[in-house]
Length: 307
Ligand code: SAH
Image (cartoon, rainbow, N blue to C red; front, top):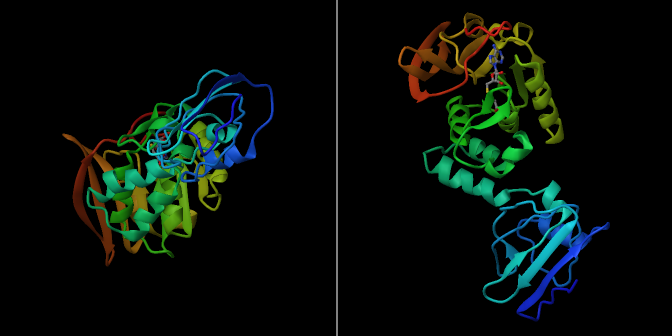
């Protein structure tokens, strides 16, 4: 294989079969989204991915794809139209998608009016691609919900941000989520509040969420596999409750477990579709407001029937 040299223009066009070994400098370059392009690298990996385009010697886009195992194709040119393709193990195992995530916050979330700095910072920080099944990673920052298995979905990023902002969370609020799913919303909550509780009825997803939250450093989130309709009475009252599956009426136990001054956001299935309902407890009464038409998966019982 030929090497890249920072003095040249079109420097390497190579293809080689790999057996073992990893170049640390190339791994660094791939794993740091804006790392400057350095001379001389020998990316070695069992599978090949591509990063493009690069400008001025910096990675500017995290688009990746896998090509054939045990082979790598390298092409680079420097100067004004720097363009580079290559592969590394790090790019495969640890693409950080930073730019895609920042872009998501700007174009999908801020552009639609979310302003709470805590929410924006959480959305910038939590690595959504680590909460979706591997085959959907490249779509993790798209403006849409995504399948997470078991017929369930992770919500569109904007909806996560919207529901989080409307809860007006403070660091010391105690929050309950119903419908852990992938664990992503729970991680966003954990960036903002110290005490996060989340219940998931599907045992496979409860395990998926536990794994995702552990691997991403949010193991402080308290998880329970069970029926969230019943809430988490031992830990009540909660300052905020977020329901991410849709019941046909606001569950009574959740109303009772809301603290005085507490807020609950819940997608209620009404005759014409679903509405996000915001409830606030004031002097023991619940003040109810309909805030946004939405579409969530149904809230179900252990026997699969819908609440
Ligand atoms: N908040 C999740 C997405 C939730 S999808 C995320 O960030 O990924 C809705 C989830 O609610 C599904 O995982 C579904 O299994 C769960 N669910 C449905 N009914 C439930 C119930 N009664 N109690 C707890 N979870 C429930």
